[in-house]
Amino acid sequence: MPDIDKLTQGYDATEDRLFVDVRLGDGVARRLWLTQRLSGVLVHHLCRWLDEQLALTASGHHDTRLHRFEQQAAAAALSPERAVEPGQQPVLVHSVDLDRGEQAVRITFLAAGARPGDGPQMTLDAVRLRQWLGILRGLYDTAGWYTDVWPQWLGADRKADAAGLPLHLH
Image (cartoon, rainbow, N blue to C red):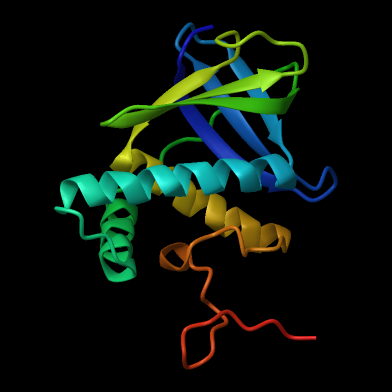
């Protein structure tokens, strides 16, 4: 399967799912649907890779303040582009393969019954991954989804008490 050349993300309230409209290297467009459950698992693993990456590049130092600085720098470097048109045959993503390298992470989206390596894939360095995760985090707010899967440096502490712990209101 060709690499993802460009993508646009959004939330569809009717489906209660995130969509990722992708344009593949061969020019074909596809719409990938991501459930909240799968997205949460993916976010966990990608944020852990960023934590490990920051520890490597910052001589073992990777606290929340440094993550926030890196996240803000990545967001500032993001420039708006024209959206990718949705593909004709939407695909519900059932699983994701992650290849976590030292400099980048490759994400392969797999539909039911797909073999590893058969789905569309994208390779993101730390900056591009932070940009992508920042957009996903905003979509979680739009969807009204549970946000405890997100680390504090990506906005999990928006409703925090003075000690910095998330508030759980009943």
